[in-house]
Every structure is written in C-alpha cells, then in structure tokens.
Length: 353
Image (cartoon, rainbow, N blue to C red; front, side, top):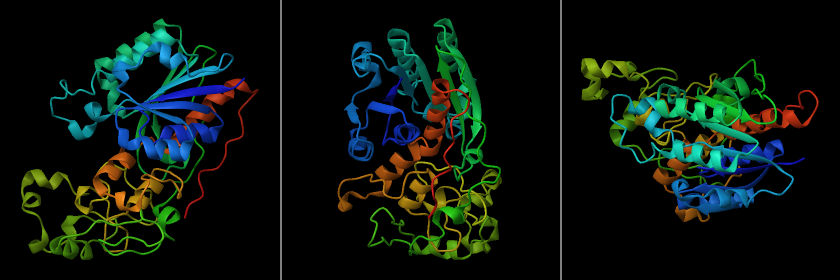
C-alpha cells in the first residue's frame, strides 16, 4: 500500500521534499503565504493551495487521498508563539496561536491513519500542546513524541525540534540516529564560490551575501571563527554590549567554525548581526544558498522563479521557517517502517558541497 500525504503549513516544501525523498506520495500542501507557491510546486511537483488552515474543511482534505492509500496528515504549525525568541512576550493574541487547534480539528474530522507534527521544543510547555496530545490519544492514536537533536540525523546545524508521530495502525517510533559525528560547516559550504559582502554569484543567484556597513565590515574583519564581539577592540563594540544586559548575547556578530555544525537557521540568518551567521573566513554573512544547504535543501532547489526576485527578507523567511528536508525524510522513513518487516534501508544524508 502507498502512503499519501497532505502537508498543512507547507511553506516552500521542506517537509514535503523530505517525505517525497522517503518514498511517500505528497498530494498537496496548504499555506497562507502565497509567495511559497512557486518553490513548493516547482521543486516538488505537488499542488499548492493558498488557504488559511482555519478555513480548510475535512471534505477537501479527504478528497486528495486515493481510495486504498494510507493517509498521512502533516501539520508543522508556525512556531513563533512557542519559540524562545518570544520568551517574555505576550503571544496569547498572536493569530498563529489557534492553528494547532485547527490542525486538531482536521485530524478529528478526517481521521487519517498517520499524523505528524514538528515544532520547537518549547511547544510542550503550552496548554495547546497537551490538548493536542490528549485529542490524539482520545481518537485512538498511538503517539510517539520526542525532542530531536538534528545533528544526530546528518542535519548540519544545532537545531532541536519536537517531533510527533501518531498512528492508528501500530506504534511508530522515529528511526534511531544515523550520524555519530555531526556534518560540519566545511562539508556543506567549503567548496562554494567565494563571495564578498554585497556580492552575488553569476552562477547561482541565491548564492548572494548581504551588504555590510563600513562599521560591520570592520567588525567582521576582527572576528574570529567561534569567537564573540568580545574579541573586538573597544571602539567597535556596540553600546548595548557595554551594558550588563548585553553581556548575555555573545554569539551575535559571530563567525561559524569550519569543523562544527552551523547554528540553528532562523528567518534572519543572512544577517551578520543576527546571530552566529558570519562565514568562517570570508568577511561576510552566509549567503541565502548556504542557509538553504544548512537546511538540507538540494543545491538546485529554486525559491523564486526569476533572478530579479532574489530579495533577502522574503527568501530568508522561507528558508528559516522551513522544516529541514533531511528531517522530513527521516519522518517519512519512520512511517514507512510499518509497511515492511523490520527497518527499511536508511539512505545517507545529502551529499555536501
């Protein structure tokens, strides 16, 4: 039997691409951000539906599945209300907050055989999460839920995610870790074309580095791989870093290290001042393509249709919000265990560049 999936909150298709790679047939993806349509459809050959999940009905979800398929409903709801980046802020009025309840509603009404959700680890601290788990169990799902350390699966960043696998056809666990040693920054981007700040590759329009101010160019030249702004001379330090409250953020304006994984990719990972997003040796922040590679997108994954559409903010948002493709693949392979005797062969992590 074939597993078929519908991907809610699909974005540009990180989870979808991974599921497809595992052998699962993805029929459609839903997202409210229409700018994701091209990347989703072009790279994955699946239908993109521009629609708020709150307005999606069970009948339209059910219509995507073939009669004899094993139905998987995936829903990686936006993580911003639960993220550590919003600690201390009142997120209760965030419009994204009820989306997990709408996902729960669709599960209840469609009753697919399989369900998966991926989110930030902090999601478990919130009532909406416990309500979601309780609903799954009340509907008869066997539920696996665990924090996943992404480097243990060949994803070259320190990202941690909370993953749920729920099944009505037998208990399913995530496959065991596939990598004893982490994939490093050098393995992923070490052979890419060198760039200066503000430069774009003539071969790949997504391999583009954001410009740096004169001050930030001076700062990055004084930055060491794995170091902090504390390595700078006093005159280069930002005023906020001279205050006691600023001492707790040493990784901003940091360079990555060649022999370690990258930090977690965020929606602002193309900016030198937004985290440890400086290139290990070139005087610039990482390019959009490098960020996509750290998210394990293939090097030929297209995010916009035309070169002139390469703008840092929207593409950075697409990349940073994505589920790493490799994590999607591991989730898909974990579900496919139920179709075969024993563990299926686990392909290696993507070839690095």
